[in-house]
Image (cartoon, rainbow, N blue to C red; front, side):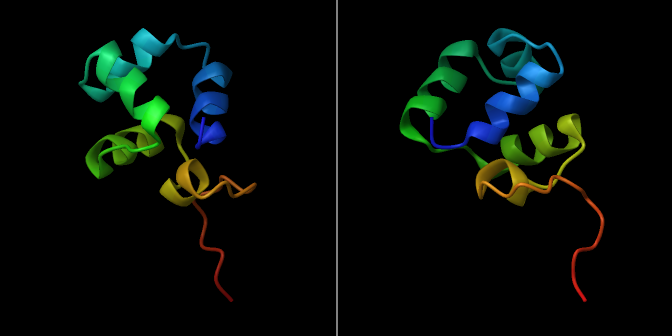
Length: 73
């Protein structure tokens, strides 16, 4: 899996992969293919970030800090 934070957040919420697929408006098979290939559509990653209450960067860039707060200074 290229984006372990997606899997970690899904598990943290106690969601199955099928639950996550439905929440994102895609089929389980589509989600499975994206996980295998490491390619997700941006609109779906945006839905995941909202669902998990985290940043897109955290989900796809392997950041440790998932906070949505402004990190710039």
